[in-house]
Length: 352
Image (tube, rainbow, N blue to C red; front, top):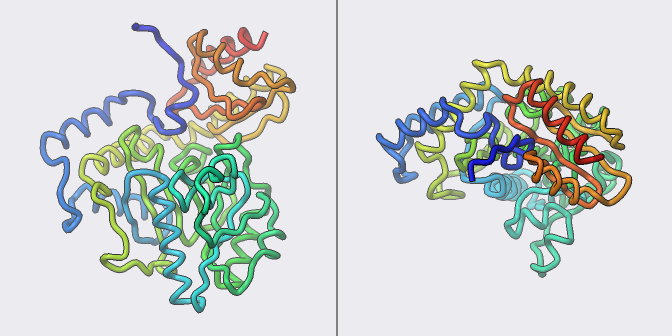
């Protein structure tokens, strides 16, 4: 229809550079004219370059490419199972948190600990133990000789942006180290500058053994990645695979995204604009404002979040109601102060 919208959801944290960013469009167009796909029996230069760049930005690791966050987390779960067979006498249980979200495959939906998603698909896979988020003592109490890993989101995203409490990730990291467990961090939604750091765990000054990425990595082109440090690197040829994982087109898109984020200093920009966005939300009079960088949420006292979302859409603004009370905002990293001012004016008008 030609109507314009200001997007504060970015395809649910996918379009880090907004829609149709010219650098990504040029890179993908050129790659499509050269080579779109080849068998995963072979490496391609974009795949090698992307793996190298991700390692440079994060921690010494090897990288498995796939097509989504769910696939990246499936890889992490399989990796942990094999690591437990080798290093913890067959331990296989993974401690996760209630209300987390790791995907919609059978294993990842079970890992998430949200019955509203998993109950229709009983019986569910065994091997996941759920505890409360931000409760390190609960993780410690849940650990047994069957435990192989702890799997967390540094900021719980799907249920409404709940950051890790100060000291939580550090204590969990120390617990995993002292009890020979893997720490798996799902940075599918939080990674690549969204929280004002390249990766959200950097706010806590820790490093995981395994990290998963997707969403914004391809700037709208489907791609996921599972990174494992040398301690966790147990996959051998044939253990896992993906027909389309690491294809030249997706890897080229991801390289373009990373290049623009670094060239345009968008990690620091996300931190700065996150504060501007927070101030704008405060002015709405909403309660329970929470988040990091350009990953923010707020709540209404009354159950009107879905009505607010529809009202914003009619006004030309895209926001995300995650439940009856909570609104999630995950705009592109390129958002400007002027655009936040415009969004604030629209939200204030809709909120009344």
